[in-house]
Amino acid sequence: MVSAPETVRAAFRKHFPDGGAVEIFRAPGRVNLIGEHTDYNMGFVLPMAIDLCCLAAIAPANHGKLRVYSQNVQALQEWPIESISDARPAGNWGDYVLGVAQQLARAGFPVGAADLAIYSTVPVGSGLSSSASLEVSTALALLGGRTIAKKDLALLCQRAEREFVGVPSGIMDQYASVHGERGKALRIDCRSVSHQAVALPDGAAIMVVNSMVKHELGGSAYRDRVRECAEAVEELRRWSPKVHSLRDVISTDLAPLSGVPLKRARHVTTEGERVESFTAAAEIGDLKGMGDLLVASHRSLQHDYEVSCEELDFLVDTALGIEGVYGARMTGGGFGGCTVNLVAIENVENFEIRISSAYEIAYGKIPQVFRFLPDAGAEQVL
Ligand code: ADP
Ligand code: MG
Image 1 (tube, rainbow, N blue to C red):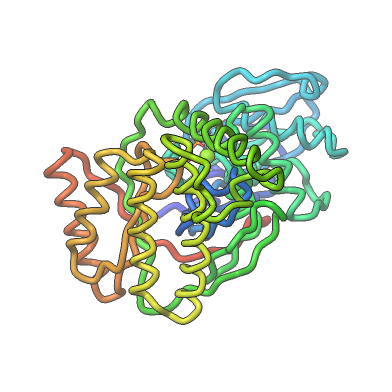
Image 2 (image 1 turned 120 degrees about the horizontal axis):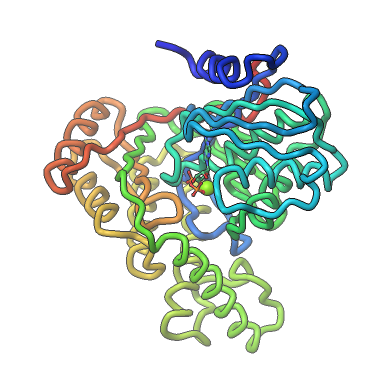
């Protein structure tokens, strides 16, 4: 089998035959174990970096442009270096690269002419954060040897996604891609932008099932939820001026709310509490407790936050009937993408077979099933 670094190097050679010697950088995708839709509410999340990544191969050039080829999209884009600082988004994948280049320049790291080849093993658009792994690997490649604090790297990539690409994303994805630790999940405080590593107990595997669907509603619903949470905060502020985000309230403080704002705020506040309980359960190796919290998270996303969909509910409900499954929930923004499942090690193979065949019979699609090990964060590989 051809390794991912060999693939990106071959793509570079093919599309930039006159290019110089390459350096290669990798940045992992991530799966969020629990704490969904809490990041942009300044709360806690618990993702882990996964052993799938985006690779960026780069060499300096003297043609005065930034040229980038994506092996996944099989397309090339280029921009004159002097146009980068005032560039506007074009509405396609190149925006992630251009946005990062622009943010680097603004942060005092001007980008020189270069050829860049990208190849990612993270499934694109499935909630495993191919976008952050693209941003972070690109940023490291464009930085060359210049150093930047890890936290600033994550924040810079988040700004590229928020301000240039135009997705109001929280800090979780970029932070996890930068700070991943082998064997550990990261409990991230999205307000202080800091983390604590959480060891995951032996005896259970993190299994991720990709529904292979992405409903159109996803993008607009994400923006709607961001807005609805802000509206709930407005409402709560009338009662207590100390409330600046849903992070500042607990689930028993929601009496002033009703209807949709109540449901959204109830999800966000109980989900924050579940991150705390899940971390505590992981620390004492309580797999059953962890599994129950995953299920509670899913039900809250399904009924209160209303970001699940038929396929994700099917995958969760089916998983819960399979031997050795402690718990399951949708992960990522919702309306498609993946579920995350906590499965006893000895039942992993059976789980894979049973979940795949049930989904194929019901939806006529074969889901991708992954067993992920928590991996290290972004780094130079060559
Ligand atoms: P996710 O981050 O969950 O995979 P997003 O919708 O946030 O989903 O980001 C997916 C987008 O990121 C793609 O539509 C594409 O524009 C861009 N992208 C990610 N990986 C690559 C890649 N390897 N090459 C080109 N574009 C990519
Ligand atoms: Mg993304």
